[in-house]
Length: 204
Image (cartoon, rainbow, N blue to C red):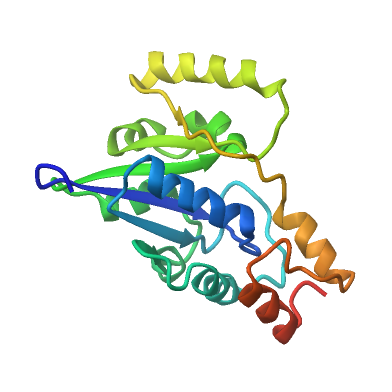
C-alpha cells in the first residue's frame, strides 16, 4: 500500500477448468503490478463465450479455491456467481472500486483485443488500469495489439499494458477434451484440481 491507496488486481474468467497457465498468470500479475491483493473471480455466465449446458459454476469456483489455496494475497471470490446472470466486468469493478483503491484488470490477448466492445467500455477504462498477458506466441497478433492500443489511447486516454512472462500455451477447451479421454491432467492443472475433476467425473 502506497500513500494509503491499496493496489487491487481483478482476474476474472470462466476457469472451466482453472489450469496451470491461469495460476502462472495470476502470480505474474500479483508480482509485476506490485499488488496488495488479487481477486480471482469465476464468472456466473460469461457474456463473451458459450458455456457447456452441463456447466456448474460451483464446481468452477471450488476448483479455483483449490488451485489458489495457500497463495498469499490471492482471494477467490464468488461475487459474480452470487450476483447471478451474465457477469459483466463493469459491475464487478463498480463493486470493488473506492477512493482508497486502485484497480488493475488482467485479461488475455483475445480479451485485450475486444475490450473496447465490452459493456460500458469507457467506464471500465476509468475504473481500472487494464493489463494483459499473452498465453500464445503468434507473432501476427503483435500488429493488432499495437493498433488496438492506439485506438484505446485515442478513445479512452489509456492503453492496455503488457505483463511480460513466459508463454504457457494451454487452453481449458483442450483440458476438457483430455479429461474426456481419461488422460492424466496433472501437467495441465494443479494436482488438487486434477483430483477434483476425477472425483466428480467432470468433462466426461
